[in-house]
Length: 124
Image 1 (cartoon, rainbow, N blue to C red):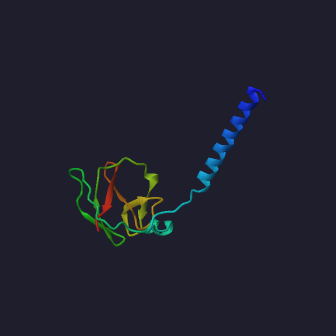
Image 2: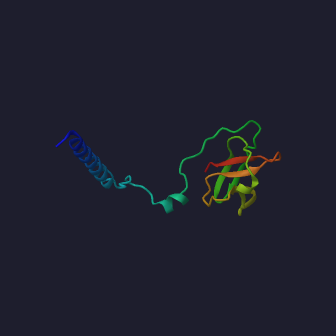
Image 3: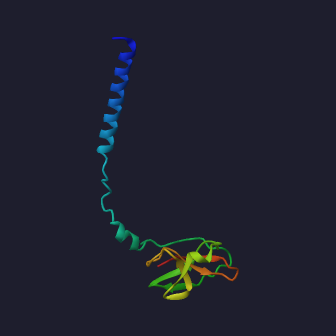
């Protein structure tokens, strides 16, 4: 047996060992999840249970808006976003939601006179 053959055997055994370890490591992985996890379908429509506190820009309308059984307030600064991203909310046509968002909404928007969008956050 020459040195080359011995080196090949060592390399093969090493490759086989690494392959076995990786197979066992990945095969042993399974999604255990966390206790009390909510199924995805329920989590997508669940309302956030904590109050929202957000800074508003000076001069922002501090009026409360009632939409979908919740109260909303201006929160954050105006954002410049394309109109195609928004769709009117059925309860209040002057209030808009993102086109992919469904009730209960995470965030709503009101169009300002300058064309920007003012985000509304749920307060209760």
